[in-house]
Length: 403
Ligand SMILES: Cc1cc2nc3c(=O)[nH]c(=O)nc-3n(C[C@H](O)[C@H](O)[C@H](O)COP(=O)(O)OP(=O)(O)OC[C@H]3O[C@@H](n4cnc5c(N)ncnc54)[C@H](O)[C@@H]3O)c2cc1C
Image (cartoon, rainbow, N blue to C red; front, side, top):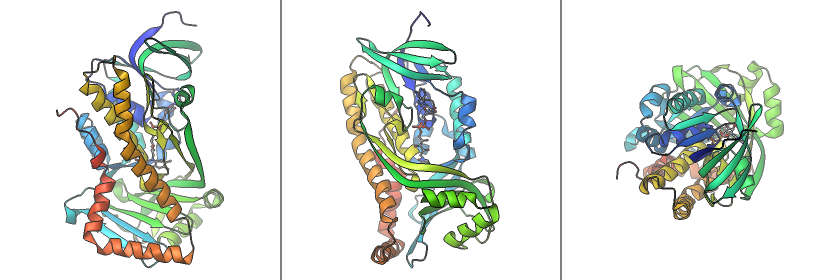
């Protein structure tokens, strides 16, 4: 047991993308920060997330610009300029060219490994941020100064004191449960198969979203004319598709996706990822706050989870900056934070859950309605503009560092 207790202004539990982004955003603050991560940075980089490519909304690009990180991220991303939304076996489809609305790019595809590397390299060089890894939060105790956190670090136990503790520790947040914050959980009984594919034709920076008989299928533009694949299936179908050899898998994929990009010539390593939704009933407790997946983890159908989590982090950063990083009046700040996140969370939770349910039903009437909906979307420019605007996440951004 370590006998000296280190004191920090802020302890961030969880060094995933959102925890690291929050630490990066606090770089210019006078606060002392500890980032606690149960895995080593090398292990984070080597885990299942490797294969994932995250769709960054314009809100995320703006936040990274404001953090001074965009110039490092931009060379690694692929811009999305067009959207192609269709349903397998249905007549409706919508093709939206964001350049016609002067709203291109609508977003960017960023390989997770690259994002993790940029963020972790940056955070490791920050004067006011200490990183403790591998160290896992195991218990905490409220006291007059904030919280005393008990952590398991390699072979020793560690105690740290925080004025403010931030839970960025993912969907199964330990901090959330230690604080007694209840959450709603829903299993979709679905898994996403993630991989990369090489199409015959150039992707031309178009993102394809297709609702197939198994579930939503996204084929998204990435570097060197490859595409990232996210294909949602029922858990049984996902297992069956994972068991196929590459040729049979590509055949099944082509059958569902069609030949919009010509033949699909090759597929990379496949990983299957079970899908669920969890959202915390409240985002705060005295001197404690949740961000990212710890606050809400949503179905990836609309590529919103990271973007929403980054806006959580940004909102917290704005509020801390607005009160000159004084941590004495946290109650008011935390209430404002929770209030500021209501509309954005509700929008994304309803959107992702609604899309998942709407496109899961294969009844003929439902299919016909979806077809009409897609055709209307394909024909109506004002509706397309609304969709692009909503997807950008910009309406939920706070102004920051510019007041
Ligand atoms: C298939 C799929 C595709 C997706 N695609 C997109 C997309 O295109 N766009 C998008 O916006 N979002 C997407 N998402 C969602 C996005 O990946 C997540 O919302 C985001 O990565 C969450 O980051 P986080 O840092 O909050 O949580 P996590 O990535 O879960 O990180 C939590 C961290 O906390 C650490 N931790 C946990 N417990 C402890 C503890 N007790 N002590 C210390 N550390 C702890 C963990 O080791 C981990 O490093 C997708 C998700 C899936 C499943």
